[in-house]
Length: 247
Length: 247
Image 1 (cartoon, chains in turn brown, purple):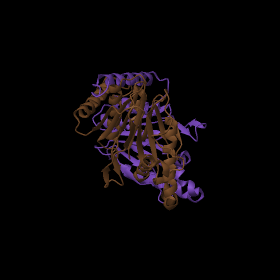
Image 2 (tube, helix red, strand yellow):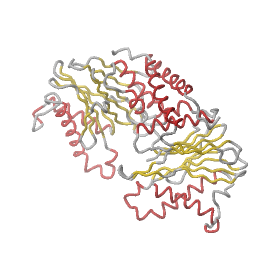
Image 3 (cartoon, chains in turn cyan, yellow):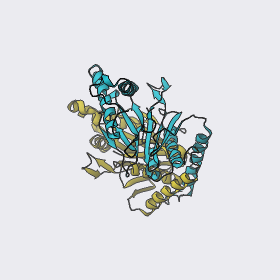
Image 4 (spheres, helix red, strand yellow):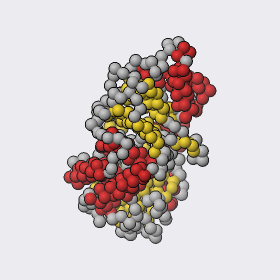
């Protein structure tokens, strides 16, 4: 499995993804699940993929080939010439449908195992930053102020802290801390999500990738965050009054 | 959906279950998911059920009928005459298989929607308290000191806090607080789990149900716990150093 999050804030969008891929527990590998397209001064697009690796990788390859050779597609549209993020999300959805169509008939009853979903975020000149979640069927939804984040993959463990803390006014350093805590909860409870974590911070109206980092298991900040959060949770737990009916 | 937890401690076993059942979002109802069999001085058995309500209710009805009329089954075994908790878990597993067999042929391709799983815990005179998780296929596993709790239903949201805090030495009042925090996280993040919460505390070697309560949404303790926990989480979050690369 996988865990990926995109969080849209007033100051920009922050993305994080794990790197573990497994086909059964004895076949575990690391793959990059964060893909970036950048034209400095014009656009930044970030795509996070979850689900079947053959599907998500094929989608990324199609998107990349469409850019390298715009003529090979009848409409010539690609992520670098899309006029809006909405158009970009449609292009990703169409690429996903194309992969499903290509594989479709041969999968038969195993089709359910060949699912993928994506988080797409970024900014194209002329628009504010936008964030989308693209489903396996190629349809998609956009993040709003009410729900500023999207998660794909093993999203449940890390959702309670996002539900409680994520607000559009957050500073980027706090948002990065929040995503890493959400990852820490997921990593502790689910073996199929693994370090390192890829993180990317995009700041509104900069139109280039400012900060991108790969956080390894022995990263001093992540280790101190992980231990500090455990301690803080245990302290918080100890400070809440016990249930009165038991001792 | 459903959320149920059983936690086995040195001092006894604590159980909690929600009460929401839904068949689509416009058909929501409350059903008891906690079932108790007690013979004072000899045994207490508690069964929590998740999954398809028609299946889990049928299992409980079969178990109850086997007790009322021990002769109707060829072996005459039931939850009140089982010699060990292991035998009791087998009886539940067999009842579940019988329900699947009865429904089986008519379900056809919808069979996947007719799944159920159970947590069974309690104590029978002559043994220590034991806790089991029974799968849809009727097989089961037993809780150990390493993993003292079982969850069924929507278990992921509430797992991180259990993973961090649950230890066999806990006092029962703290264990009750822990389960309610785990429920609070689940309730906030998933609409299909709903109040009220049924809770039961069984204390080792008492052989009767000491404390059983239904916690409603307006319960003063639960409300203060829910607010206190949110505040404590936000404080804990604020007290962790921000990620250095962003502001």
